[in-house]
Length: 311
Image (cartoon, rainbow, N blue to C red; front, side, top):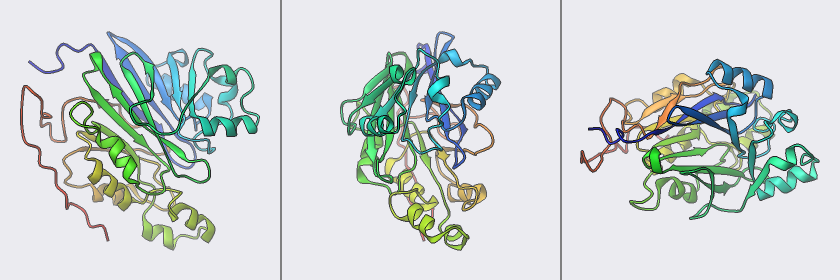
């Protein structure tokens, strides 16, 4: 008997689009055939988002929550301040909420849906649904920082977990610890969605202004492909890696894929132009179909540590 035979809830992630032209991901929570949605970032227009959701078989009224990593225009489209389903809750860091208020964004009807969370993740966090706990961690990015999210799915979801982090600038020890977990009761995340923004060689050789290059590579902008690999090796996600926010000008999916060749996790590379497939969170498998270690099926998992050249 599979460990999931008696479970009635599933969580799946689809990245609708990711890149400098707009970022939006959707987390689908299904309980006994009823699906509710949590959006992560609102960087696409409401019209485009609703159209893409319809293509996936979902409606705007199924959106219950939105998690905002930060307020950059490619993560927060102004149209949502008038088009958000009225029952939905928009979660943002208190620092971002203050900035949104200063910019005049927190007028009705947007104001009634906004909820804030405080600095740091730790043992705190908030629930977006029963058995779905969100633990945020604020990392450096430009002036206001960016929130990375760990989502833990308990109860009928079977103890699965998702880590979501983009626009990081650099990999801080706190991020790895947040996603690696806190012992047997909170292990490393099953699925890790993390940015792999640029190839350093392509970035240096690009015609971008020097100021932009410094912003991207200066520790408060984005992660390079190699920095993303380093983060993955530290976090050791148990099943799947989803790569986010690839630069159109300074990256190449083929280069990125080659860096992960031979890894023992499944790999999905998002794009700006088309949604990814649904990635099941906590499906109990790694790349190649090997069952994840469970109490019913113990095994020793040896994760390669030297697959990539970091030069």
